[in-house]
Length: 93
Image (cartoon, rainbow, N blue to C red; front, side, top):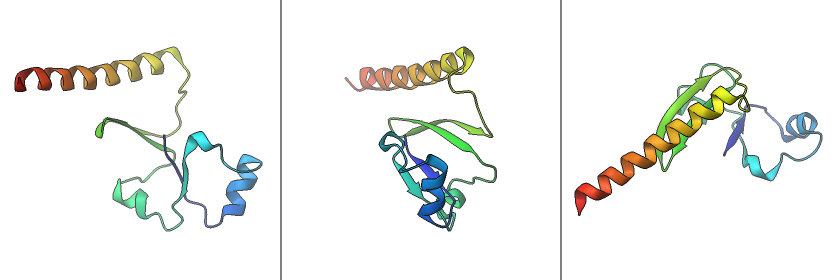
């Protein structure tokens, strides 16, 4: 997971997190919104599911990531990518 913030200074980020961002977020600053433009982000938050380098889904706006329906969707998308990889490997041999 990588999280980008559009804040202009790290003090605002530290205030939001009440300290340093959690290491698991791999937080990066994007104050000039260069990364946001590269990904076509026009609404925050924006989330992308990338599995093994393949973009599988894009979500605009807030989501309840812990809901049973969202967890099922994410598992399904990840499983589809892994199955596609396996299919590709079998066809090469």
